[in-house]
Amino acid sequence: MENNKNSTTFKIPVSWEELNLHVAKAISKARRSDTWAAYSRVSQVNPREASYSMETQPEHTEQYARTNGAKEVLSYADPDQTGKNSRRPGFQAMIRDINAGKVDVVVVHRLDRLYRNMASLLKFIQLLKLRGVRLVSVTEQLDTEKWWGQIVIAVLGCLAEAYLHQTSTNTRTALHARRQKGLNLGRIPLGYCNGLCSTCTDINGAGYCPLYGGPDRPESKRGRIAVPHPVDQQVIPLIFQLYQQNFSFREISVYLNHTSFKLPDGTPFHFRPRRRLGEIK
Image (cartoon, rainbow, N blue to C red):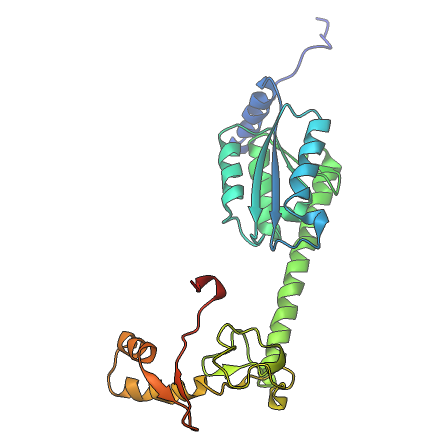
């Protein structure tokens, strides 16, 4: 019997994974048009980095999708979101649509927009494989439909994870160095300030601190060391005394906010609680 060159030999799947892959490919071929999911993410919105801004990424990815045959483009975005994990609203919405069979291709401006963790990235790529969905990176010109693209994506994923590890290591080193020098870590505690009186931007500075607008305090080492605030430092021992007298936190707060006090030189003042600028009315 003469072989028909146009016939297709069907290979019986030997595992559930292989069967799912066959089904996903069949569903993908049955679709009338390609639907591309354009995903964008930045850890911090920085207008100085226009190439990775939340305005530029969607524009480039959608243009790339349209140029390469996309009939429909679904946009997903996560501004101010880290790539360390998948707990991102836009990313989760995209995964739901992928599982629902609404997406044929996922396109990103750069691979690390998806993840900076190699294990999670490979898991995501495996999900796309099982659903018959391609992954395309505009900047790296990568496509998981091609074997070379699969190799390069794995390598770039390793580099993205290495960059994250290096950044975390540098941050821990810098914090350890500040701790060894006795410098403040994080927000300056109540009762202290940075000592930069000449350029003070504290909302409780003008009309409250007697040193506001004056020369910088030399003991602050140009703002590196927290120094006692001339007014707020008077409140710390008072809070301690009230707490020893079994005042509750709420009672202490009410007392401080509604009582007039005097500085050591006799100047009267009302204690101002710390507030963020957006909370001032």
